[in-house]
Every structure is written in C-alpha cells, then in structure tokens.
Image (cartoon, rainbow over all chains, first blue to last red; front, side):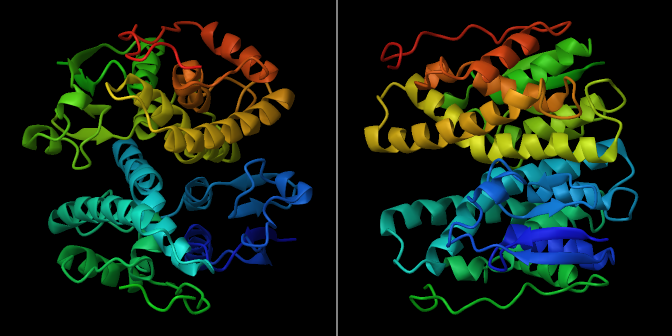
Length: 209
Length: 209
C-alpha cells in the first residue's frame, strides 16, 4: 500500500509535493488529472477534494488531504525541512501564506494563461505582471539579507516559493535583475535529492516577451 | 512588556488575530494602521513587514510576524484550538489555505470594494460574486456533514473562515440559503471568550443588494 498523489504535471503546486516526496524518499502512486479537461470537477474527484483542485493526496486509509502547502506541512513533520522552534514554524507558514496570496495568484496564473490555447487578455495580464513583480521585489529584499526564507535554512517555505518562481519566465517575468532571487534559486537546486519539474508542452503562443 | 498588534479595524484578517488573542486571554497593545491612508507602505511599517500588510505582530524582542493564518498558528500552539494529531493539523491548514486562496480574494475583496468611496466596477464585482459563492458552496457541503472544519472541533481553521464569512453580506452575499453555514456561524459565536468584530463605518453606497 502506498499513498496516491492526484496531480497535473503542469502544476507548480503539484510540483511542490513531488519535490518534497522525492527529497523525503517517500514512494507514491501518481494519478494524472487533467485540469483543462475538467477532470478535477468530476463527482469522483470532488469526493476526494470538495474544492476540486490538485494536488490532492489520498492516504492508505482513504482519507484525503488537499492544498499544496498543507500537504508540505504534513510530510515535513519530524524532518529537517520543518523548523523545531515555534516562531520559525510560524515564520515558515508566513512565507507560505505570502506565496498563496501575494505570489501564486499573479505569477502562476500568468504562466497558466500562456499555456491556454487563447492568448491572454493584455489588460488582465498587465495586472498579473504588476502583482508578480511586487512579490518578486519582496523576495529580493528578504533574500538580500537571508539565504533562505525561514529559520536560516532550507524548509518547506523555500519549496513553496521555488515552485512558481523558477518557471516565472513562462509567465513573461524577467528575473535577470533579481540577483538575490537567482542566488537562492541556485541554492534550492543544489539541495540533496532535488528533482526538476516535469517537462511541459511548448507554449502555444511561443515564449512570452 | 507586551506584544503589539498592528491592525486596521476594518480588516477581517486582523479580526482573526484579535479573536484568537481574546479567546486565549493574551494581552496586547493595539496600534491602528489605516490601509486606505497608505500607512502600511511607510518605510517604518515595511521594516516590520516587507509585504506591507496588516495584521502584523511585533514581539517583545522586536521580531515581527505577519500573515493572519501564520499568526493564528503561532498563538494556538499548545492550546485546544490547535489539533494534536498530525493529519488533523494539516487538515486545519488545508482549510486555512482554502480561506486565503479560494474565499478571501472574493468575499473580503468584494466587501472592501463596498467600503471604498467609489462604487465598485459591476463586471469585476460579478467575478468576485461568482468566486465567493463557489467558496460558500464548498463550505456548505462540508458543514452539512461536519460541525467544524477540522479535527471535529473548534480550531483556528474555524476562526480563519469565520472572519469574512460572518460579514459576507457587506460584500453583497446573500447567506440565507446556506443553512449549514448559518448553523456553524452560530456555533462559532457561542464559543467561550468570543468577541465580535469592531463596528465599522457605514457603507458609502448603502447596503449592497
């Protein structure tokens, strides 16, 4: 018996979970669910996650857990990638909440739009660019003075923020001036057991400017 | 010496923290920060939270913590409102992530727009209505079979979701058909030490339809 991960290879939220499971050496069955084909909205899938989203993990006893950052928390307990100190734990969650509220809705959504058959609406895209760069500015300021996001070492806060930051170019973001962010991306890639994100189909409208 | 909470009384995210501090009987200094006047974007405030948002807590030693759900996590450790079991903990965080990603950006933002001097753009508001009702539908389905969100009892997941759900009418949401949600709102209000949200100024355009 093994856990099952319901995931779409295009998803950076799913990649967070694939990365943490690889680094913690936890085996799992992978069931691919195609978001664009509506496979997260079937009655069967909704019985696993009422909110109809991947990644969702199903445990051996049939219980399910969704929301990428909650899944990271679950698997990281008792390992080096979850801080021991209460303030550091909350600080890791602070950056994970920043990722879900101030980063993902801009950077991940802009990237997703570039993967859709229709080109994105320029005005809506401009808003995503503005919010995404604001999030990258916050990261740059933090990383100018810190090697990692919380507890002075590699934690699930870094995994959460790495997922969509390292593919931000696919959403049209230019990371070249983000010196500290680029240094941090390199530190994350060099962590033991790191695995890359799955290759994805080419962007339908070519590479964003 | 006491902790300091930087907060704007209009904020439901701030109310989450005020509610948890009241229920846990933790004294604090309150410093009101006016979002609409840009007081979260001053250099002094940004030194406490690079992301320029309230609520932010400053501890006696000068360290700061932001993101409402991370603050709830910090104060709930070792109390009855944080589950002891690892799955239940992750499940509470699952609902808190749902709140920040699938609930707050619709219900809280629609409410905020109704508090601005300019009436909200009808098309943008319609999108917020759609997302907000989708979140309420998920809550209704969960609460039809469960008294609380996680661990079978009152936790910080309930506090996180209560904050903006109980004032959803101020964003134009009609909760009358959400029987299970209304039952849950009553259970939350009846918890020991519950405090109401601060009264807010009247809506500039009258009550939303």
